[in-house]
Image (cartoon, rainbow, N blue to C red; front, side):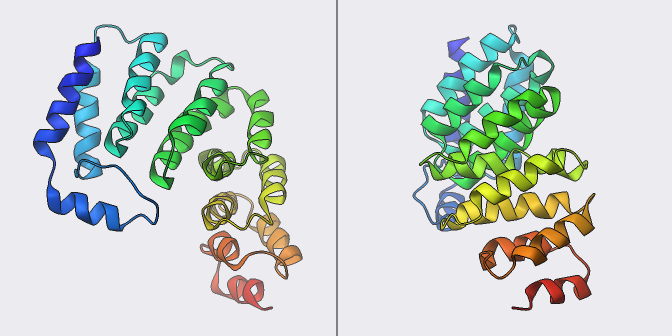
Amino acid sequence: MEDVITRIRSELLRNADEKTRMSGERYFKEEVKIYGLKSANVTLTGKEYYRSLYDKSKSGIFALCEQLWQSGYMEESFIACNWSYYVHRQYEAGDIKVFERWVSDYVTNWASCDTLCNHSVGTLVEMFPECLSELTDWTSSDNRWMKRAAAVSLIVPARKGKFLKEIFQIADLLFYDPDDMVQKGYGWMLKAASQAHQKEIFDYVVSRKDSMPRTSLRYAIEKMPSELKKIAMER
């Protein structure tokens, strides 16, 4: 199974484009390590090699994901995120610790953080709501990506109207965090929740708008009707 990693890396290198690499680097404030491929091409490559795998057990796939994460390349992290989601029917509650370690040890940018958390972690907490307490714990981490992960893991469940209590709890815990990556993360979570709970999110924002960071405020109300936006933005 290890040979598949070598073949993936060879293909990513072969299809890498210098212009895409330089453009991608400028897109991030933090330093990133990238080959230089468009995300659609990375996804396609990952799917093709996943189909070729004989062993699709969760343990086997997670072991391969570990190798992909260890390279530090963003494109390999995307493949690892997608592969870990492909085996979601095999998830167990304890897998939250695997995902927590990946965020802690390997995530270095918002794109890898969101790709992992929107799908793999978000699906896990829907399957095992007892894992929500783990997300709450992540908010106290010193790692900016762990704190962002606590919020963005609830994006997809939030759109479905789930876990509103926990969404407010996580937003409160992250409320005064000065990091814009964290602010954007919980603002995005609130925006997603407003699709099913517009009144509740609006009331939350208005009750806290005098102290809410402007970055998270703008994210939270982005999809609201213009008249509600105006009220929320008045200081």
